[in-house]
Length: 434
Image 1 (tube, helix red, strand yellow):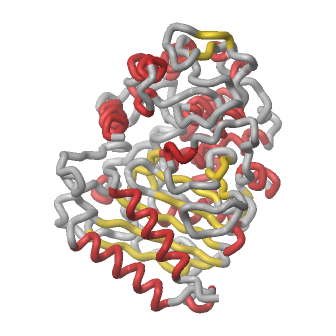
Image 2 (cartoon, one colour):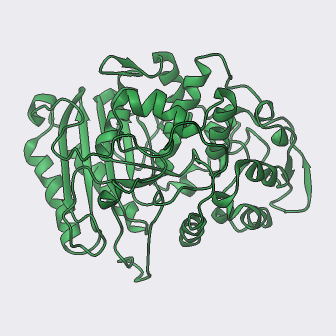
């Protein structure tokens, strides 16, 4: 994991534009950088009125403040909505790793892989226009990826032809065979890392052509493997829509939902609200730094490059929980949301999800989100709940049965982030009082 973080952060050091920008003078940045610390993102409700114990929510606040005070994390922001109402929206600790500035509720965080569900919604929005289908082969939009080869036993040189093309479902479900090179030790992984280790400095065509020359780790549709699939999906969305991913998201998601601080780069006006980690990892003592979003990546990568706030993201989640609509603005149809959030795994797919997410025992995967099955789990919650995490410490989930949406924003890139995700899960469900 430390190798993955180091490689990912290094990729962001040199900005370059992957594709011609739109006519918008700033398609990557949020449109309105003005602070809204005093504003609630959803209508407020007294916790008890929506079945949450005020006393137990106070325990949640005290627990996270104590962790910040003892120097285990700088700080964070937590938002909880239930039955369509905002029941909890609190900041704790400090905005900066030096612990000199109190954490504001409108702090901006690099959300890393929590960008993936944003891309999933963008893809389904284009699908609703009839411009793509989940069964489409990726080669329809990115011809260099039409015919791929598959590594034999993890080899980088011994390969066989792919038995079938990679589909858009494979990309959204992480069953494409595409990997993160830093997430394994096989020769195939090493080849991916050597070729695409600097992918965020590449223009999109070079990224795609480089990928076309690499072997997939598994036959498409046969194994869940975490990797660059959603970044490819974002490029598919661009090709199908004719617009840069950031522009499409701003027009169809961020703008209608009022997500003013969500985008792919932090503007100069927003930088004072950018959250940073502690200078050293409390568990290892090693230096740590996160700069994602402070400079534009080579292309707007739909898998990991976003920045957002707790207020913005809880609105995005409430839209999904509402079946695709919020405040009279329809983003997706109800059936699209249902398709996104159902389990798309089946018995013929090797489920390696716990390799990446050790607490997701008994979970499957939908379209860019993990989905809890009927079976037991390493977390509290309900069958049908869904969500995902970001490598720098953020997490979110939706529990439709409980009409519950939760966002946790913080900057904790070390392994301690796993501890706080478990703690949050226990404290939130421990506060249910109906």
